[in-house]
Image 1 (cartoon, rainbow, N blue to C red):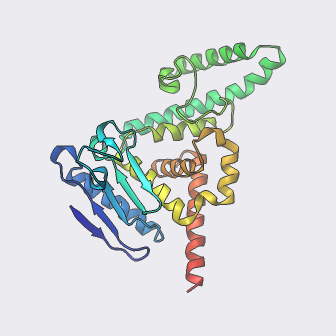
Image 2 (tube, helix red, strand yellow):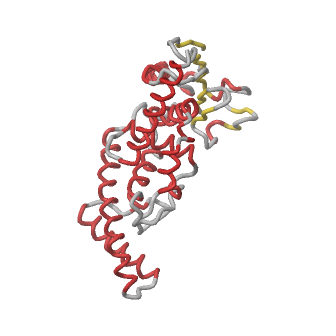
Image 3 (tube, rainbow, N blue to C red):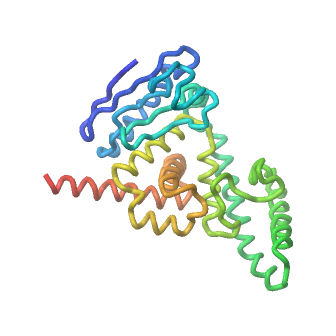
Length: 281
């Protein structure tokens, strides 16, 4: 099924979705994705997305092809293609997600974020004191985690909801975050990673739009992004993911300063690009 969305600016956006009954996007999900693309193309007229499609439209059978293998087992949920200015979805897996992040999950992440900020600040205060007392690194970690566990118990937050299955009994972020607990950006990165790991069509689509916006406005090359990422570079996979994840997080909540600062750079780059373009006419 093919449809086209026409707007002033950077050309048309074509939508191609495989019709597979219960195994593909429902009509409501397809319309939801179209509405998201429309909203962002309206906000950012320079946004270029020539095609939005699912893995089944890129060749092979509905469930398997050379590029992605069995869709249900493919680790990629969506892919932004810079050369084709397209976004493609793993429709077999993504169609099982809710359209938006559940409000109770969002509030839970933000509540835990406040707890992580407290623990991070506590670790920053404790570590120098323990080091001055000659406490070995293992002892410092054990002491910090003990105090953190006490705090979480007081708040009624299970430690595994903060550390996750990969870090039972200690406070640690999700994948790609190797910042020390006491780092000033630890909590912000933790919250962004939690949002990144949440499952919803909106979260996934906005992340890929973040990539597309970064491409057209050269956000990832901006000096402000480089300086900001230099402060927390061990918290993210790379510069492109830093931009997309922070932009996504800022679109879901305004309570994470690192995400908001990055989103402000997006808006600034878009404004400067549009002004330079109009002046060149």
